[in-house]
Amino acid sequence: MTSPYLDRAQAWCFALRTLMGYPGYAPPFHTTAWCSSSPRDVLQTMELTRIAADKGSDLVHVAFSLDVDEPLSVSLAVRQGGGVIWIPCLRLYAADEKAPIELLADDRRWSVGRRLFLTDAKLPPKHRRMQGEEIAWRRWRHAVATTASLRLGGSVWVPPGGSFEDAIPHERLKIAA
Image 1 (cartoon, rainbow, N blue to C red):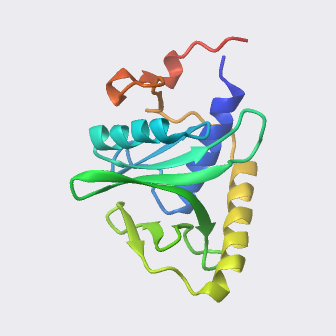
Image 2 (image 1 turned 90 degrees about the vertical axis):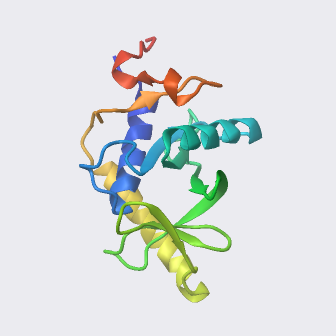
C-alpha cells in the first residue's frame, strides 16, 4: 500500500524538477535532491542542511500540509563554501510559457545550470515578476494534474532527527491503512 501523501508529494517534486530542467534520467541525488515534508521549523531546517552536506548535493524542499493538496512553500539548502545555506519561502518564476521554472529569493534567482548544479543570478526585472510567477504556478499545477501516477526509484524517507544514512527506501515503508 502507498501513501496518498507520499504519492502527492512525489508528483509535485518530480513536476518541479522537470519544469526546472533537471533531467529525469539523472540519479536521484546526483547534484540536487528533491524532497518534501511538512513545513520545517528552525531545528528541522538544520537537519535538512545537514543532509545536504552529508549527501553532497543541494536540496530543493517542497513543504506540504496533510490537509492541503498544493505545496505551501519551496525552499533551498545550497552548499556554498564550507557550509550550507537555507533559503526559505522562494517564489516560482518562468520568463514565458516555455522557459524553465526558476526560484526567486529576495535578492537572487536560482535555476538548474548547464552542469545540473543550482546556480544563482540577478533577479528578473520587477515589472515581469508577477506575470512570471503566475505562469510558473499555472504550469506546475498543470504538470501535476497531467502526470500519471509514478514510482521514482531511489526515493527515501529520512526519519526525524536522522541522517541520510538512516534513510529508508519508499518501497520498504509500511503504510497503515
